[in-house]
Length: 323
Length: 273
Image (cartoon, rainbow over all chains, first blue to last red; front, side, top):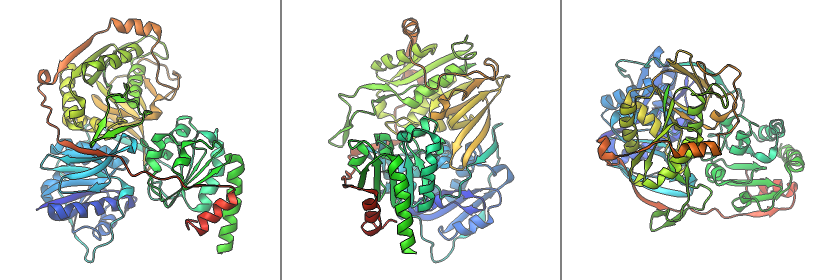
Protein backbone atom coordinates (compact mmCIF):
# COMPACT_ATOMS: atom_id res chain seq x y z
CA UNK A 1 0.00 0.00 0.00
CA UNK A 2 2.77 2.42 -0.86
CA UNK A 3 2.16 5.97 -1.97
CA UNK A 4 3.33 7.25 -5.34
CA UNK A 5 5.01 10.63 -4.96
CA UNK A 6 5.38 13.12 -7.78
CA UNK A 7 7.93 15.91 -7.92
CA UNK A 8 5.68 18.75 -9.12
CA UNK A 9 7.56 21.70 -10.53
CA UNK A 10 6.63 25.29 -9.93
CA UNK A 11 7.01 28.04 -12.48
CA UNK A 12 6.40 31.54 -11.17
CA UNK A 13 3.68 30.85 -8.63
CA UNK A 14 1.90 28.19 -10.64
CA UNK A 15 2.14 24.46 -11.09
CA UNK A 16 4.21 23.84 -14.21
CA UNK A 17 2.09 22.20 -16.93
CA UNK A 18 4.99 19.84 -17.64
CA UNK A 19 4.22 18.13 -14.33
CA UNK A 20 0.69 17.08 -15.35
CA UNK A 21 1.82 14.10 -17.46
CA UNK A 22 3.83 12.83 -14.45
CA UNK A 23 0.70 13.08 -12.30
CA UNK A 24 -1.11 11.09 -14.95
CA UNK A 25 1.60 8.39 -14.99
CA UNK A 26 1.51 8.38 -11.18
CA UNK A 27 -2.18 7.49 -11.22
CA UNK A 28 -1.42 4.53 -13.48
CA UNK A 29 1.40 3.42 -11.18
CA UNK A 30 -0.64 4.01 -8.01
CA UNK A 31 -3.16 1.44 -9.26
CA UNK A 32 -0.36 -1.14 -8.86
CA UNK A 33 1.10 0.24 -5.63
CA UNK A 34 -2.24 0.54 -3.87
CA UNK A 35 -1.50 3.87 -2.19
CA UNK A 36 -2.46 7.45 -3.01
CA UNK A 37 -0.81 9.88 -5.40
CA UNK A 38 1.06 12.51 -3.40
CA UNK A 39 2.22 15.72 -5.06
CA UNK A 40 5.45 17.15 -3.68
CA UNK A 41 6.12 20.84 -4.17
CA UNK A 42 9.46 22.35 -3.28
CA UNK A 43 10.32 26.05 -3.46
CA UNK A 44 9.35 29.37 -1.99
CA UNK A 45 5.82 30.80 -1.96
CA UNK A 46 3.95 27.65 -2.91
CA UNK A 47 0.35 28.28 -1.83
CA UNK A 48 -1.11 28.94 -5.30
CA UNK A 49 0.78 26.09 -6.94
CA UNK A 50 -0.17 23.76 -4.06
CA UNK A 51 -3.85 24.59 -4.50
CA UNK A 52 -3.50 23.77 -8.17
CA UNK A 53 -1.66 20.49 -7.46
CA UNK A 54 -4.40 19.52 -4.98
CA UNK A 55 -6.79 19.24 -7.94
CA UNK A 56 -4.78 16.28 -9.20
CA UNK A 57 -3.45 14.48 -6.11
CA UNK A 58 -5.02 12.99 -2.99
CA UNK A 59 -2.39 14.66 -0.87
CA UNK A 60 -0.02 17.57 -1.38
CA UNK A 61 3.19 17.97 0.59
CA UNK A 62 4.82 21.38 0.41
CA UNK A 63 8.37 22.28 1.38
CA UNK A 64 8.30 26.06 1.42
CA UNK A 65 11.60 27.66 2.34
CA UNK A 66 13.66 30.59 1.06
CA UNK A 67 16.67 28.27 0.83
CA UNK A 68 14.71 26.07 -1.60
CA UNK A 69 13.75 28.94 -3.93
CA UNK A 70 16.01 27.77 -6.77
CA UNK A 71 15.88 24.13 -7.86
CA UNK A 72 19.15 22.48 -6.87
CA UNK A 73 19.78 18.76 -6.79
CA UNK A 74 21.86 19.17 -3.61
CA UNK A 75 18.91 20.52 -1.61
CA UNK A 76 15.94 19.02 -3.48
CA UNK A 77 17.06 15.38 -3.43
CA UNK A 78 17.19 15.12 0.40
CA UNK A 79 13.79 16.87 0.60
CA UNK A 80 12.35 14.22 -1.73
CA UNK A 81 13.78 11.53 0.55
CA UNK A 82 12.11 13.22 3.54
CA UNK A 83 8.84 13.37 1.60
CA UNK A 84 9.06 9.66 0.72
CA UNK A 85 9.51 8.82 4.41
CA UNK A 86 6.73 11.14 5.54
CA UNK A 87 4.23 9.82 3.01
CA UNK A 88 5.23 6.15 3.06
CA UNK A 89 6.20 6.28 -0.59
CA UNK A 90 7.22 3.25 -2.61
CA UNK A 91 7.65 5.18 -5.87
CA UNK A 92 8.86 8.63 -6.83
CA UNK A 93 8.05 10.11 -10.22
CA UNK A 94 8.71 13.34 -12.04
CA UNK A 95 8.78 14.61 -15.60
CA UNK A 96 12.03 14.33 -17.55
CA UNK A 97 12.50 18.11 -17.62
CA UNK A 98 15.87 19.74 -16.99
CA UNK A 99 15.03 19.81 -13.28
CA UNK A 100 13.66 16.26 -13.22
CA UNK A 101 16.71 14.91 -15.01
CA UNK A 102 19.01 16.72 -12.60
CA UNK A 103 17.28 15.94 -9.32
CA UNK A 104 15.63 12.51 -9.64
CA UNK A 105 18.76 10.35 -10.18
CA UNK A 106 20.39 11.99 -7.16
CA UNK A 107 17.26 11.24 -5.12
CA UNK A 108 17.41 7.64 -6.40
CA UNK A 109 21.00 7.39 -5.13
CA UNK A 110 19.96 8.62 -1.69
CA UNK A 111 16.99 6.23 -1.61
CA UNK A 112 19.04 3.24 -2.82
CA UNK A 113 16.46 2.99 -5.57
CA UNK A 114 16.78 1.94 -9.17
CA UNK A 115 15.59 4.55 -11.64
CA UNK A 116 13.77 4.25 -14.93
CA UNK A 117 14.49 7.24 -17.19
CA UNK A 118 12.15 8.75 -19.74
CA UNK A 119 9.33 6.26 -19.23
CA UNK A 120 6.71 6.13 -22.00
CA UNK A 121 4.46 3.43 -20.50
CA UNK A 122 3.68 1.99 -17.07
CA UNK A 123 3.26 -1.79 -17.31
CA UNK A 124 3.16 -2.85 -13.66
CA UNK A 125 4.28 -2.00 -10.15
CA UNK A 126 7.92 -2.06 -11.20
CA UNK A 127 7.75 -2.54 -14.94
CA UNK A 128 8.13 0.25 -17.45
CA UNK A 129 8.74 0.82 -21.13
CA UNK A 130 11.30 3.39 -22.23
CA UNK A 131 13.10 4.26 -25.45
CA UNK A 132 16.83 3.68 -25.89
CA UNK A 133 19.32 3.95 -28.74
CA UNK A 134 17.88 7.27 -29.91
CA UNK A 135 14.40 5.79 -29.99
CA UNK A 136 15.47 2.97 -32.32
CA UNK A 137 14.56 0.46 -29.62
CA UNK A 138 11.88 0.32 -26.99
CA UNK A 139 13.15 -1.27 -23.83
CA UNK A 140 11.01 -3.04 -21.23
CA UNK A 141 12.65 -2.80 -17.84
CA UNK A 142 12.00 -3.95 -14.30
CA UNK A 143 13.18 -2.04 -11.29
CA UNK A 144 14.30 -4.60 -8.71
CA UNK A 145 14.72 -2.31 -5.69
CA UNK A 146 11.88 -2.00 -3.13
CA UNK A 147 11.68 1.72 -3.86
CA UNK A 148 11.29 2.92 -7.43
CA UNK A 149 12.22 6.20 -9.07
CA UNK A 150 11.17 7.12 -12.59
CA UNK A 151 11.16 10.13 -14.87
CA UNK A 152 8.40 10.19 -17.44
CA UNK A 153 8.49 11.51 -20.96
CA UNK A 154 6.21 14.51 -21.04
CA UNK A 155 4.75 13.74 -24.46
CA UNK A 156 3.96 10.08 -23.68
CA UNK A 157 1.26 10.71 -21.07
CA UNK A 158 -1.80 12.91 -21.39
CA UNK A 159 -1.91 15.71 -18.81
CA UNK A 160 -3.81 14.58 -15.70
CA UNK A 161 -7.45 15.63 -15.45
CA UNK A 162 -8.58 17.26 -12.19
CA UNK A 163 -10.11 14.88 -9.65
CA UNK A 164 -13.62 15.48 -8.25
CA UNK A 165 -12.44 16.35 -4.75
CA UNK A 166 -9.23 18.27 -4.12
CA UNK A 167 -6.52 16.67 -2.01
CA UNK A 168 -5.34 17.83 1.40
CA UNK A 169 -2.41 20.23 1.53
CA UNK A 170 0.17 19.82 4.29
CA UNK A 171 3.51 21.41 5.02
CA UNK A 172 6.30 18.84 5.13
CA UNK A 173 9.38 18.97 7.36
CA UNK A 174 12.41 19.36 5.14
CA UNK A 175 14.99 18.61 7.82
CA UNK A 176 18.45 20.12 7.46
CA UNK A 177 18.92 22.02 4.20
CA UNK A 178 22.54 21.96 3.06
CA UNK A 179 23.46 23.29 -0.37
CA UNK A 180 27.02 21.92 0.06
CA UNK A 181 28.48 25.35 -0.58
CA UNK A 182 26.79 25.53 -3.94
CA UNK A 183 24.51 28.27 -5.24
CA UNK A 184 22.45 29.25 -8.23
CA UNK A 185 23.90 32.65 -9.06
CA UNK A 186 21.36 33.66 -11.69
CA UNK A 187 18.91 32.39 -14.27
CA UNK A 188 18.76 34.26 -17.53
CA UNK A 189 15.25 33.52 -18.65
CA UNK A 190 14.68 32.97 -22.32
CA UNK A 191 12.32 35.76 -23.25
CA UNK A 192 9.68 34.32 -25.46
CA UNK A 193 5.99 34.81 -25.87
CA UNK A 194 5.85 31.41 -27.56
CA UNK A 195 4.68 28.25 -25.84
CA UNK A 196 7.30 25.89 -24.37
CA UNK A 197 8.58 23.35 -26.88
CA UNK A 198 7.31 20.44 -24.82
CA UNK A 199 3.78 21.89 -24.53
CA UNK A 200 3.34 23.40 -28.01
CA UNK A 201 0.66 22.09 -30.36
CA UNK A 202 2.68 23.22 -33.37
CA UNK A 203 6.46 23.17 -33.69
CA UNK A 204 8.46 24.67 -36.55
CA UNK A 205 12.10 23.56 -36.66
CA UNK A 206 15.02 24.62 -38.79
CA UNK A 207 18.11 22.63 -39.65
CA UNK A 208 21.62 23.05 -40.93
CA UNK A 209 20.24 24.08 -44.32
CA UNK A 210 19.10 27.39 -42.82
CA UNK A 211 22.80 28.31 -43.05
CA UNK A 212 22.76 31.36 -40.73
CA UNK A 213 21.13 32.29 -37.45
CA UNK A 214 19.55 35.37 -39.01
CA UNK A 215 17.70 33.13 -41.48
CA UNK A 216 15.71 31.76 -38.55
CA UNK A 217 13.81 35.09 -38.49
CA UNK A 218 11.56 33.90 -41.27
CA UNK A 219 10.91 30.64 -39.38
CA UNK A 220 10.02 32.72 -36.34
CA UNK A 221 7.51 34.59 -38.44
CA UNK A 222 5.94 31.31 -39.56
CA UNK A 223 6.05 29.95 -36.00
CA UNK A 224 4.25 32.98 -34.60
CA UNK A 225 1.70 32.95 -37.38
CA UNK A 226 0.88 29.34 -36.45
CA UNK A 227 1.04 30.07 -32.70
CA UNK A 228 3.69 27.41 -32.25
CA UNK A 229 7.13 26.95 -30.72
CA UNK A 230 10.43 27.23 -32.55
CA UNK A 231 12.82 24.29 -32.60
CA UNK A 232 16.03 23.33 -34.34
CA UNK A 233 18.11 20.33 -35.23
CA UNK A 234 21.31 19.60 -33.36
CA UNK A 235 23.29 20.55 -36.47
CA UNK A 236 21.77 24.05 -36.39
CA UNK A 237 22.47 24.35 -32.65
CA UNK A 238 26.00 23.01 -33.09
CA UNK A 239 26.62 25.61 -35.77
CA UNK A 240 25.60 28.30 -33.29
CA UNK A 241 22.62 29.49 -35.36
CA UNK A 242 20.24 29.23 -32.41
CA UNK A 243 20.50 28.54 -28.67
CA UNK A 244 20.81 24.91 -27.66
CA UNK A 245 17.60 25.02 -25.64
CA UNK A 246 15.77 24.93 -28.98
CA UNK A 247 17.32 21.59 -29.83
CA UNK A 248 14.83 18.86 -30.71
CA UNK A 249 16.29 15.37 -30.66
CA UNK A 250 17.72 12.48 -28.69
CA UNK A 251 19.90 14.75 -26.61
CA UNK A 252 17.62 17.78 -26.69
CA UNK A 253 13.88 18.19 -26.25
CA UNK A 254 11.42 15.44 -27.12
CA UNK A 255 8.30 16.86 -28.76
CA UNK A 256 5.07 15.32 -30.03
CA UNK A 257 2.91 18.19 -31.29
CA UNK A 258 -0.15 18.02 -33.51
CA UNK A 259 1.94 19.49 -36.32
CA UNK A 260 5.71 19.39 -36.76
CA UNK A 261 7.21 21.36 -39.63
CA UNK A 262 10.82 20.41 -40.40
CA UNK A 263 12.51 22.99 -42.59
CA UNK A 264 15.91 22.30 -44.15
CA UNK A 265 16.41 19.37 -41.80
CA UNK A 266 17.83 16.25 -43.43
CA UNK A 267 16.56 13.95 -40.69
CA UNK A 268 19.47 12.43 -38.79
CA UNK A 269 18.41 9.53 -36.54
CA UNK A 270 19.17 11.69 -33.52
CA UNK A 271 16.75 14.37 -34.65
CA UNK A 272 14.02 11.89 -35.57
CA UNK A 273 14.23 10.50 -32.03
CA UNK A 274 12.96 13.82 -30.76
CA UNK A 275 9.99 14.35 -33.07
CA UNK A 276 8.76 11.14 -34.61
CA UNK A 277 5.90 10.96 -32.14
CA UNK A 278 4.35 14.06 -33.75
CA UNK A 279 0.85 13.58 -35.13
CA UNK A 280 1.45 15.22 -38.49
CA UNK A 281 4.93 15.79 -39.87
CA UNK A 282 5.70 18.18 -42.71
CA UNK A 283 9.13 18.17 -44.30
CA UNK A 284 10.48 20.90 -46.54
CA UNK A 285 13.88 20.10 -47.99
CA UNK A 286 15.58 20.77 -51.28
CA UNK A 287 17.04 17.25 -51.34
CA UNK A 288 14.37 14.76 -52.45
CA UNK A 289 16.44 11.92 -50.96
CA UNK A 290 16.63 13.43 -47.46
CA UNK A 291 15.73 10.77 -44.83
CA UNK A 292 13.18 13.14 -43.25
CA UNK A 293 10.83 12.40 -46.17
CA UNK A 294 10.68 8.74 -45.09
CA UNK A 295 8.52 9.65 -42.13
CA UNK A 296 6.90 12.87 -43.24
CA UNK A 297 3.16 12.81 -43.85
CA UNK A 298 3.56 15.67 -46.29
CA UNK A 299 6.82 16.32 -48.06
CA UNK A 300 7.72 19.28 -50.21
CA UNK A 301 10.92 19.28 -52.23
CA UNK A 302 11.91 22.93 -52.26
CA UNK A 303 14.44 25.35 -50.84
CA UNK A 304 13.37 27.12 -47.68
CA UNK A 305 14.13 30.42 -49.41
CA UNK A 306 11.22 29.93 -51.79
CA UNK A 307 8.93 27.67 -49.73
CA UNK A 308 8.77 29.49 -46.40
CA UNK A 309 7.67 32.92 -47.69
CA UNK A 310 5.03 31.18 -49.83
CA UNK A 311 3.95 29.12 -46.85
CA UNK A 312 3.54 32.25 -44.73
CA UNK A 313 1.41 33.86 -47.46
CA UNK A 314 -0.75 30.73 -47.90
CA UNK A 315 -1.31 30.25 -44.18
CA UNK A 316 -2.33 33.91 -43.93
CA UNK A 317 -4.88 33.33 -46.68
CA UNK A 318 -6.32 30.27 -44.94
CA UNK A 319 -6.46 32.09 -41.61
CA UNK A 320 -8.13 35.10 -43.24
CA UNK A 321 -10.71 32.86 -44.91
CA UNK A 322 -11.40 31.11 -41.61
CA UNK A 323 -11.88 34.60 -40.19
CA UNK B 1 44.13 19.91 -10.31
CA UNK B 2 43.33 16.25 -10.77
CA UNK B 3 40.38 15.42 -12.97
CA UNK B 4 38.70 12.07 -13.44
CA UNK B 5 36.87 11.74 -16.74
CA UNK B 6 34.56 8.93 -17.87
CA UNK B 7 34.73 7.33 -21.31
CA UNK B 8 32.08 4.80 -22.20
CA UNK B 9 32.28 2.90 -25.45
CA UNK B 10 29.04 2.85 -27.44
CA UNK B 11 28.08 1.21 -30.72
CA UNK B 12 28.44 3.62 -33.62
CA UNK B 13 25.11 5.49 -33.56
CA UNK B 14 25.14 5.90 -37.35
CA UNK B 15 24.90 2.14 -37.85
CA UNK B 16 21.46 0.60 -38.10
CA UNK B 17 20.49 -1.02 -34.82
CA UNK B 18 19.89 -4.77 -35.08
CA UNK B 19 17.21 -6.26 -32.88
CA UNK B 20 16.63 -10.00 -32.65
CA UNK B 21 14.82 -12.18 -30.11
CA UNK B 22 14.16 -9.29 -27.75
CA UNK B 23 17.83 -8.40 -27.66
CA UNK B 24 20.06 -5.82 -29.27
CA UNK B 25 22.51 -7.63 -31.53
CA UNK B 26 25.88 -5.91 -31.22
CA UNK B 27 27.97 -8.72 -32.74
CA UNK B 28 28.89 -6.65 -35.78
CA UNK B 29 28.84 -3.24 -34.13
CA UNK B 30 31.81 -0.95 -34.42
CA UNK B 31 32.60 0.87 -31.22
CA UNK B 32 33.52 4.40 -30.37
CA UNK B 33 33.68 6.63 -27.33
CA UNK B 34 30.34 8.21 -26.47
CA UNK B 35 30.41 11.70 -28.01
CA UNK B 36 29.46 13.46 -24.77
CA UNK B 37 32.33 11.64 -23.06
CA UNK B 38 34.68 12.93 -25.76
CA UNK B 39 33.43 16.40 -24.85
CA UNK B 40 34.14 15.54 -21.20
CA UNK B 41 37.73 14.62 -22.12
CA UNK B 42 38.09 17.87 -24.05
CA UNK B 43 36.74 19.78 -21.04
CA UNK B 44 39.15 18.07 -18.66
CA UNK B 45 42.12 18.73 -20.95
CA UNK B 46 41.27 22.42 -21.34
CA UNK B 47 41.02 22.76 -17.57
CA UNK B 48 44.64 21.64 -17.31
CA UNK B 49 45.97 23.88 -20.10
CA UNK B 50 47.37 27.39 -20.28
CA UNK B 51 45.40 28.00 -23.45
CA UNK B 52 45.22 26.11 -26.73
CA UNK B 53 48.31 24.00 -27.26
CA UNK B 54 49.79 25.59 -24.14
CA UNK B 55 51.71 24.03 -21.31
CA UNK B 56 49.74 21.72 -19.06
CA UNK B 57 49.42 21.57 -15.33
CA UNK B 58 47.44 18.93 -13.51
CA UNK B 59 46.43 15.39 -14.32
CA UNK B 60 43.59 13.92 -16.36
CA UNK B 61 42.70 10.31 -15.58
CA UNK B 62 40.33 8.57 -18.01
CA UNK B 63 38.20 5.72 -16.71
CA UNK B 64 36.16 3.21 -18.66
CA UNK B 65 34.18 0.11 -17.80
CA UNK B 66 33.91 -2.76 -20.23
CA UNK B 67 35.69 -5.75 -21.75
CA UNK B 68 39.41 -5.74 -22.44
CA UNK B 69 38.79 -4.55 -26.02
CA UNK B 70 37.91 -1.11 -24.63
CA UNK B 71 41.67 -0.64 -24.22
CA UNK B 72 41.62 0.46 -27.86
CA UNK B 73 39.14 3.29 -27.27
CA UNK B 74 40.88 4.26 -24.04
CA UNK B 75 44.18 4.42 -25.91
CA UNK B 76 42.49 6.92 -28.25
CA UNK B 77 41.57 9.09 -25.27
CA UNK B 78 45.19 8.99 -24.06
CA UNK B 79 46.21 10.03 -27.58
CA UNK B 80 43.94 13.08 -27.22
CA UNK B 81 46.08 13.99 -24.23
CA UNK B 82 44.73 12.30 -21.09
CA UNK B 83 47.57 11.25 -18.80
CA UNK B 84 46.60 7.72 -17.84
CA UNK B 85 43.76 5.27 -18.09
CA UNK B 86 41.81 2.99 -15.81
CA UNK B 87 39.82 0.12 -17.25
CA UNK B 88 37.40 -1.73 -15.03
CA UNK B 89 36.92 -5.10 -16.69
CA UNK B 90 33.22 -5.95 -16.73
CA UNK B 91 30.38 -6.93 -19.02
CA UNK B 92 29.00 -3.41 -19.29
CA UNK B 93 25.71 -4.61 -20.75
CA UNK B 94 24.92 -6.22 -17.37
CA UNK B 95 25.43 -3.01 -15.43
CA UNK B 96 22.86 -0.32 -14.77
CA UNK B 97 23.54 3.34 -13.97
CA UNK B 98 23.58 2.57 -10.25
CA UNK B 99 26.27 -0.13 -10.60
CA UNK B 100 28.35 2.13 -12.87
CA UNK B 101 28.09 4.97 -10.35
CA UNK B 102 29.10 2.63 -7.51
CA UNK B 103 32.19 1.57 -9.46
CA UNK B 104 33.04 5.21 -10.14
CA UNK B 105 32.53 6.12 -6.48
CA UNK B 106 35.14 3.51 -5.50
CA UNK B 107 37.55 4.91 -8.08
CA UNK B 108 36.97 8.40 -6.73
CA UNK B 109 37.80 7.09 -3.24
CA UNK B 110 41.11 5.71 -4.55
CA UNK B 111 42.06 8.53 -6.90
CA UNK B 112 40.74 11.50 -4.92
CA UNK B 113 40.18 13.81 -7.89
CA UNK B 114 39.18 17.46 -7.47
CA UNK B 115 36.62 17.15 -10.22
CA UNK B 116 34.81 14.35 -12.05
CA UNK B 117 33.67 15.20 -15.58
CA UNK B 118 31.17 12.99 -17.40
CA UNK B 119 29.17 13.24 -20.60
CA UNK B 120 25.56 14.15 -19.80
CA UNK B 121 24.31 10.87 -21.22
CA UNK B 122 25.44 7.95 -23.32
CA UNK B 123 23.85 7.69 -26.72
CA UNK B 124 23.03 3.98 -26.35
CA UNK B 125 21.30 3.72 -22.97
CA UNK B 126 20.11 7.35 -23.05
CA UNK B 127 19.45 7.20 -19.29
CA UNK B 128 21.16 10.42 -18.18
CA UNK B 129 21.73 9.23 -14.59
CA UNK B 130 25.31 8.25 -13.79
CA UNK B 131 26.77 11.67 -12.93
CA UNK B 132 23.85 12.57 -10.70
CA UNK B 133 23.88 9.20 -8.88
CA UNK B 134 27.64 9.44 -8.40
CA UNK B 135 27.32 12.92 -6.89
CA UNK B 136 24.56 11.61 -4.61
CA UNK B 137 26.62 8.62 -3.47
CA UNK B 138 29.64 10.82 -2.77
CA UNK B 139 27.60 13.62 -1.19
CA UNK B 140 29.33 16.02 -3.59
CA UNK B 141 27.86 19.05 -5.35
CA UNK B 142 26.79 18.50 -8.94
CA UNK B 143 26.36 20.64 -12.02
CA UNK B 144 24.75 18.88 -14.93
CA UNK B 145 24.36 19.56 -18.68
CA UNK B 146 27.07 22.21 -18.69
CA UNK B 147 27.40 24.77 -21.45
CA UNK B 148 30.47 26.33 -19.82
CA UNK B 149 32.76 25.98 -16.82
CA UNK B 150 35.25 28.36 -15.26
CA UNK B 151 37.50 27.14 -12.47
CA UNK B 152 38.37 29.81 -9.92
CA UNK B 153 42.04 30.70 -9.59
CA UNK B 154 42.12 29.33 -6.05
CA UNK B 155 40.85 25.96 -7.31
CA UNK B 156 38.08 25.92 -4.72
CA UNK B 157 35.00 26.61 -6.83
CA UNK B 158 33.76 26.29 -10.39
CA UNK B 159 31.26 28.64 -11.99
CA UNK B 160 29.17 26.90 -14.60
CA UNK B 161 26.35 27.70 -16.98
CA UNK B 162 23.64 25.15 -17.67
CA UNK B 163 20.98 25.32 -20.36
CA UNK B 164 17.80 24.55 -18.45
CA UNK B 165 14.16 24.66 -19.62
CA UNK B 166 13.73 28.18 -18.24
CA UNK B 167 16.85 29.61 -19.87
CA UNK B 168 20.49 29.70 -18.86
CA UNK B 169 21.32 29.04 -15.24
CA UNK B 170 24.60 30.08 -13.67
CA UNK B 171 25.54 27.70 -10.88
CA UNK B 172 28.60 27.90 -8.68
CA UNK B 173 29.77 24.69 -7.09
CA UNK B 174 32.31 24.00 -4.40
CA UNK B 175 34.99 21.48 -5.29
CA UNK B 176 35.32 18.55 -5.22
CA UNK B 177 32.30 18.20 -7.48
CA UNK B 178 30.75 16.12 -10.23
CA UNK B 179 29.89 17.82 -13.51
CA UNK B 180 28.29 16.50 -16.70
CA UNK B 181 28.70 18.25 -20.03
CA UNK B 182 26.41 19.09 -22.94
CA UNK B 183 27.37 20.03 -26.49
CA UNK B 184 28.02 23.75 -25.87
CA UNK B 185 31.01 22.87 -23.70
CA UNK B 186 33.26 22.56 -26.75
CA UNK B 187 32.68 26.22 -27.65
CA UNK B 188 35.83 28.29 -28.17
CA UNK B 189 35.67 29.99 -24.79
CA UNK B 190 33.43 27.61 -22.86
CA UNK B 191 36.12 26.19 -20.58
CA UNK B 192 38.80 27.95 -18.60
CA UNK B 193 40.92 27.39 -15.54
CA UNK B 194 41.57 30.90 -14.20
CA UNK B 195 44.75 29.70 -12.53
CA UNK B 196 46.21 28.70 -15.88
CA UNK B 197 44.60 30.22 -18.94
CA UNK B 198 44.31 33.97 -19.68
CA UNK B 199 40.83 35.50 -19.98
CA UNK B 200 41.04 35.64 -23.77
CA UNK B 201 42.13 32.00 -24.16
CA UNK B 202 40.41 30.26 -27.06
CA UNK B 203 40.29 26.70 -28.26
CA UNK B 204 39.05 25.09 -31.48
CA UNK B 205 35.29 24.75 -31.55
CA UNK B 206 35.39 20.96 -31.45
CA UNK B 207 36.81 18.16 -29.38
CA UNK B 208 40.44 17.62 -30.35
CA UNK B 209 41.58 14.71 -32.43
CA UNK B 210 44.66 12.69 -31.67
CA UNK B 211 47.81 14.01 -33.31
CA UNK B 212 50.48 11.63 -34.55
CA UNK B 213 52.64 12.81 -31.65
CA UNK B 214 49.75 12.15 -29.29
CA UNK B 215 49.28 8.65 -30.68
CA UNK B 216 52.97 7.88 -30.19
CA UNK B 217 52.92 9.28 -26.66
CA UNK B 218 49.79 7.30 -25.79
CA UNK B 219 51.59 4.02 -26.44
CA UNK B 220 53.74 4.65 -23.38
CA UNK B 221 50.93 5.79 -21.11
CA UNK B 222 49.60 3.48 -18.45
CA UNK B 223 46.22 1.78 -18.65
CA UNK B 224 45.61 0.05 -15.36
CA UNK B 225 43.13 -2.79 -15.33
CA UNK B 226 40.85 -3.31 -12.37
CA UNK B 227 38.08 -5.77 -11.63
CA UNK B 228 34.83 -5.27 -9.80
CA UNK B 229 35.91 -7.61 -6.94
CA UNK B 230 39.10 -5.46 -6.64
CA UNK B 231 36.85 -2.50 -6.07
CA UNK B 232 34.44 -4.39 -3.83
CA UNK B 233 31.43 -3.65 -6.03
CA UNK B 234 28.85 -6.32 -6.84
CA UNK B 235 27.29 -6.30 -10.30
CA UNK B 236 23.72 -6.45 -9.08
CA UNK B 237 21.72 -4.10 -11.23
CA UNK B 238 18.68 -2.42 -9.68
CA UNK B 239 17.24 -1.94 -13.16
CA UNK B 240 16.92 -5.06 -15.29
CA UNK B 241 16.28 -5.14 -18.99
CA UNK B 242 13.48 -7.59 -19.84
CA UNK B 243 13.43 -7.16 -23.60
CA UNK B 244 14.03 -4.80 -26.46
CA UNK B 245 11.55 -4.27 -29.22
CA UNK B 246 11.61 -2.26 -32.44
CA UNK B 247 9.41 0.83 -32.29
CA UNK B 248 6.42 0.91 -34.62
CA UNK B 249 7.50 2.18 -38.01
CA UNK B 250 6.07 5.41 -39.24
CA UNK B 251 5.19 5.21 -42.86
CA UNK B 252 6.04 7.94 -45.28
CA UNK B 253 3.17 9.98 -46.62
CA UNK B 254 3.03 11.69 -49.95
CA UNK B 255 5.03 14.43 -51.55
CA UNK B 256 3.08 17.51 -52.45
CA UNK B 257 3.73 19.56 -55.54
CA UNK B 258 3.38 23.05 -54.18
CA UNK B 259 3.04 25.12 -51.04
CA UNK B 260 -0.56 25.82 -51.98
CA UNK B 261 -1.32 22.08 -52.09
CA UNK B 262 0.51 21.57 -48.79
CA UNK B 263 -1.48 24.22 -46.96
CA UNK B 264 -4.75 22.99 -48.47
CA UNK B 265 -4.00 19.46 -47.24
CA UNK B 266 -2.98 20.65 -43.78
CA UNK B 267 -6.19 22.63 -43.56
CA UNK B 268 -8.74 20.27 -45.15
CA UNK B 269 -7.25 16.79 -44.71
CA UNK B 270 -5.06 16.84 -41.58
CA UNK B 271 -7.04 19.74 -40.06
CA UNK B 272 -4.03 21.00 -38.13
CA UNK B 273 -4.10 24.59 -39.33
